[in-house]
Image (cartoon, rainbow, N blue to C red; front, side):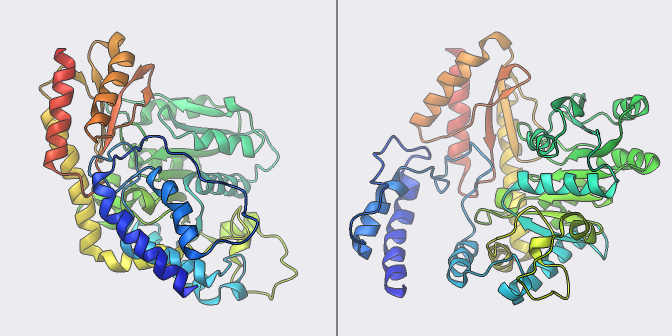
Length: 436
């Protein structure tokens, strides 16, 4: 094992050194054989098989990688991933991961307190934001005594599609998701929410506020929404997959003000802090609700002092992803967290200011996402496709989301290797495309 890891590190050093020169989105590369060979391969052959897989994969290390919420991974979290795999502990039960289970509880408790959920806060890590959102909403439904009943869910018109998946998992119809219109800044309108809740005849399992919408990075006004939920006795969930990490920084916590008033929230450190995937969590003001909702007998395990990890969510077997998060945060320190947030927000502001004189519709929010299209709406589909190809030719990768019936180009400025050179080239290409 050690010899294989040493050889892998040698190859990784080469791949890493070449990454800035490779395109963010590589050209097509032939996939290596997928079936096992008649005889097992040695280390050299394994690395040779792995080489085209690496070279044909999305490359977040390139400074022009600005398409999605996937920054380069934090180095310590990469090491944590390796150690996690070597330990092969199972977060299903306490005796299978005795220290790591405690580490998860302690670290998520600290994060929950830091985000304002209170001294008793806690939660569980799960494989991605969608699983975390489903976990939170199933818990809300159970805590509100609505299991097996028709119920509805209120959220912004710009909410994430994980809410629709949650309804399907709970056996609720798609129409149970009540979408509330947004204001000009892309935020859920509290007044319209209150009006809609007043007229609602079905039981309400939760209201969802979004701290960072996917296309434009808008943050819903959580304080007024929390006031409404408190007055009406409703469960408030905050989808903070993108923006909740701002709550870890005193400099930027106002961007997600009042998030701590939620009953539950999700956060994905993989998106902004670059913790190697997967790194996502659901946090609750009263985490015992997770065990109350999901606990099932683990008769083949010794009883735990506190509920087993497998009793606190949808997943049974889980890798010790907390190790990556803990090690990554230890390497960053508070200063590193602040600097990652500072840098991304500053790059986004620089790009917005540079694009502002151009004839663009730019419905961006106040996080590190900038989306735009020509003001002439009818040209957005062809323009966005052609301009994206021009950018890719220069090693600049943006995504092309469809938002409210129009195609946009979207830049996510969370890549710390993106500099003024890439931003200037991006602006020049956009300007030229609008005048051609």
